[in-house]
Length: 295
Image (cartoon, rainbow, N blue to C red; front, side, top):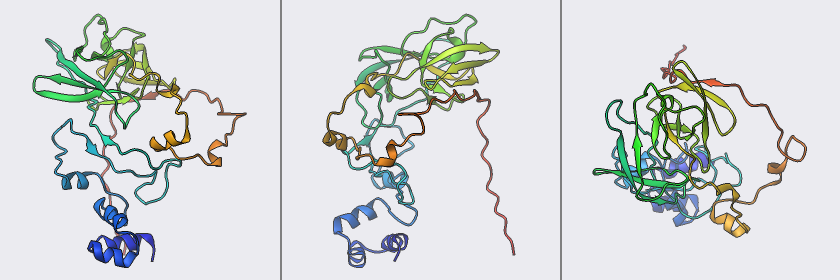
């Protein structure tokens, strides 16, 4: 019996029946049934959160359970080599949307805490305003007690940027170092979100802005797209020496195989030219699925 057929039949059985049929351990079988493992793979997203009584429509600072994938996809096959084990993690819902009023006073929040996030390389901060709290990406020099502001308007003269504040990219002077760059207006940050990364505003052409990403690639976005001033926190993330294979296993890093070290360049990676600029004019429209029936 194939694995897909076995697990598909197990999902319709009780725990005792599944143990008898499959021959695997009771604990292993319970975990497979708990996470909804069936012929299409793990479905530990919304279904598992609903079972735990978590309402995903309401934002909360409560860390969510995050089952391990072991580098495998929905089909049960390995997609990322060298992943496995590691310390148990919980997911923090970071809010990447920074939107402020177009006119009047900016939206102000106070940083109450800067903490480590096990699911990302950058540190996260708790921003509070009124009776609302949320997680955001912390900047390089952000500390508890700081006030951050979010602007929504684009003045005629460029503003004087302050680290941690969010502005439309068209409101900033040329050469400003930014992160959390939006691809489309109102969709949240897409670029420069990892530890120590930053982008640079190069030039403005009409109502468009050219931003240089950490990968040296240039993108053309609308001037209303929101960005945050400064670099992302935890700058020395990639400079830390793990020190031992045992500590690497706690991070979920398995020993690398030989094929991983093969490269096409001379003793390392090939130096390739910078890819061409990408224009983000409007988000892609959702295509309707057309089913064609034949006799």
